Image (cartoon, rainbow, N blue to C red; front, side, top):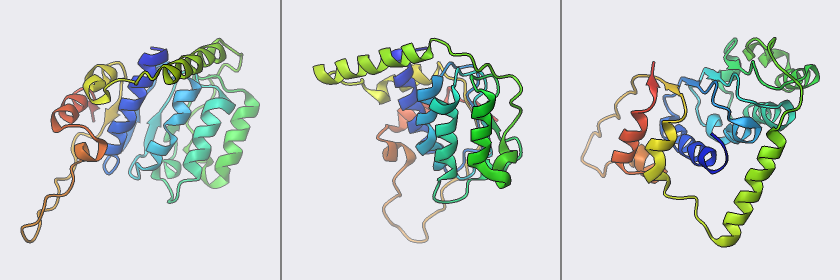
Length: 211
């Protein structure tokens, strides 16, 4: 999955992360060929997932400086401490394009207190690949679409198909909203917060692997 299809899938994934952020505990995105740019772009959405303790990004063609390092910096800079960075082996980045120097840079950003959150990193290939060329092509396509006034498409309408291309795991249940003591307007739903209809959210979550 590349180019526009990947961008649509990532937009949909980020919307789902916002909706699930209060209860999300495990996110598995291994073997999806996300690349560096898409992986790094998950940072802001992941920072909101306070209960997340396991993030699997193995085998995603992620390079160190352009992807993994940027993501780790975003997580470390979160306004509140993240459970993910306190969980031993909770962050898996194995099977990507990380050199020994880049691994050391990631560890330095985490510091001695958080370094234990890294899973095994003994299966990384630091040789350059064609990802840079692919990302340049994607950026050119984005610029052309912006110049022509082309919209990315209806995210809500494409949510089901896009998420179907990503393998993700999220917790099986979420606590029901607390009942109001007195009649009052109902709180905004997760679907409303993300601009998606309840039907769209139901369809989207049907593609997740529940744990």
